[in-house]
Length: 111
Image 1 (cartoon, rainbow, N blue to C red):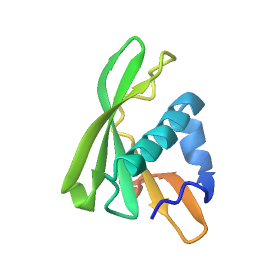
Image 2 (image 1 turned 30 degrees about the vertical axis):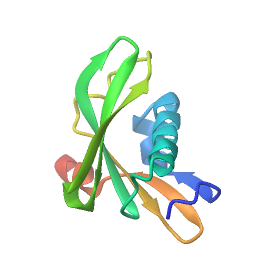
Image 3 (image 1 turned 180 degrees about the vertical axis):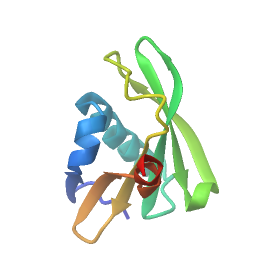
Image 4 (image 1 turned 30 degrees about the horizontal axis):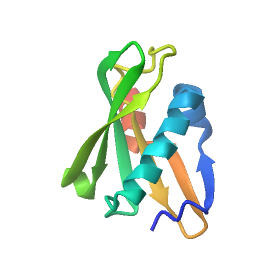
């Protein structure tokens, strides 16, 4: 599960909302989760916290409908205007790719 040699796909919607250094940080977090043997589900939701410092933001990695949850910090010192919107990024393990997209829950709140 989540073989990091698979092709990575990031949806255009993620690219529009989340800065590239943060996307890179999510990939690094996934790699660390894999190394720490913390991946238990083929779907991981990363929920952004409203808390941050000048050079750190925080995300909660959720698996199995929240049964497995752990907070991670990402080094990031750029604009933080994407925080505070309840954004959830979903990372899915597929047969040939690992994809990153915005949660359907976020899209429902826009309607």
